Image (cartoon, rainbow, N blue to C red):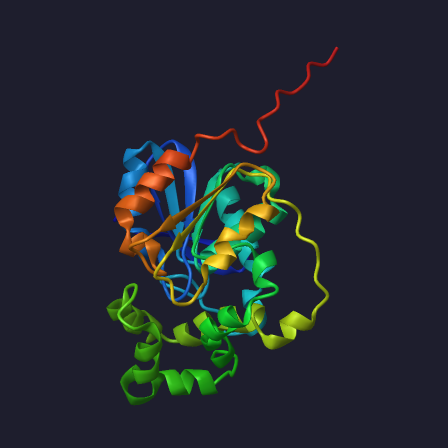
Length: 289
């Protein structure tokens, strides 16, 4: 992977990888990853004729790590993505997101429908499904509640050589890399603040706002071995998509689909991006009489 570049947008330094030429694809990772998550997808997409931009989201990797909880609201992070696209001269990218990156991708689709070509969401379904989770999903998401206690969560996760964190993560994802990344100054608090800003119990008390329908062609991918997110979240997302909707279940993969099934994910991405007509075609300006 080429060396990262850095740009200051929306009040934070964002590090990113920018490779290839062609229609732009933005890859958004989640917790506790970085752009390194996409190391198998970037070369495949570049070879497939795309320009690939993979940022380290705020709070992760080599990007800035504000310590305030309010710095990690969903709209703020969507604004990071929008500002990055504008800085790079990108008008309407394909957006691909995993985990929290998928949640951001959904929100981007609501807020910026005319600045989106195709949408691909991995592991995390539409927030309208997650707004009323089943008791089974609540049990699987127990860690989100545990992460809500500033200072306490950090101390318990680090105690005894990060034993609890290791037990939560298991040997999934880039588990051996996460400890090095989260040991950076402010990194653990920054990562947990994503949950505190957006998944606190109090957030369920807020009046539910109707979600605008997703107009872009949308592909949802879920791994059958995902222990954190149940299939209902992704399989039930189609009712919120007005554009073409496609759901793919990957049998031999867990939560970290880009790592567990890289060849299948690459095949799905290359077979989907650019194949459907985008939600908003470019309109030619009318000639003035």
